[in-house]
Image (cartoon, rainbow, N blue to C red; front, side):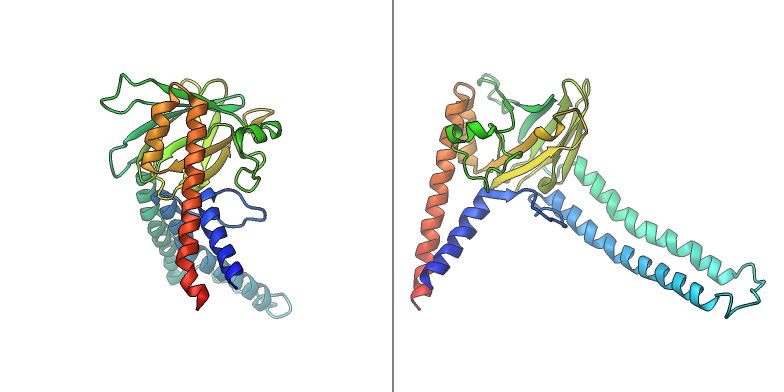
Length: 302
């Protein structure tokens, strides 16, 4: 019993911290929301279903009723009625009312997607190339003299897994894992600038509720605020060329201290900064596992 409960706690703690969101096999629903915007998108999807399902059932019922009630054998002489005023009023007013009930929250959601509720604390520029992503961090206010941080993010080759310490296929899935993830702090409003260097790409991160075209010669802006630490996966969602399927997007959300340590050393030693960051995350994960095991011990003893 102790072993089972300890294993469940280990899976809950380690799994939650590692893979925050990624595509799953036979997935029919949206990925778990990691930002307030994605939470609103999920709410709006469920809200819309309250209109779609009754309308579909009503139309299906009317079609079946007409087919059965007015078939030739039962209704040999068709009615000559050309219109009914009450039905026409209802048939016109009801769709207008439904469209208003859907349009108002959708406009609010659209506005929220382009208007952060707080001033962004961090700005990252994502540039789409054939076929990888490049990230540039804008220096924080008052730290303009700090060394600029920019690097490329390329799909992780199978032969590089061992050397990079990313052998766990559950945490670093094939065709989704990258060598250098975008690193951002948790609970921080991030301004994301998206552009393309050659052809049109698209920056899509489902768990964050963002999808923005990367158009050469133009910069599109969006924002997000991740509320849970972890590793999130997305992909280019524009058919951009023969290797379109091989330019995944990975965003690692870490604590504020871990981010500060990473960004301070990334300018001079990028790989060293990533190595230190991974070590810090693993140490934090081990501590959470140990705390969870200690917390579960009295219950297991009982």
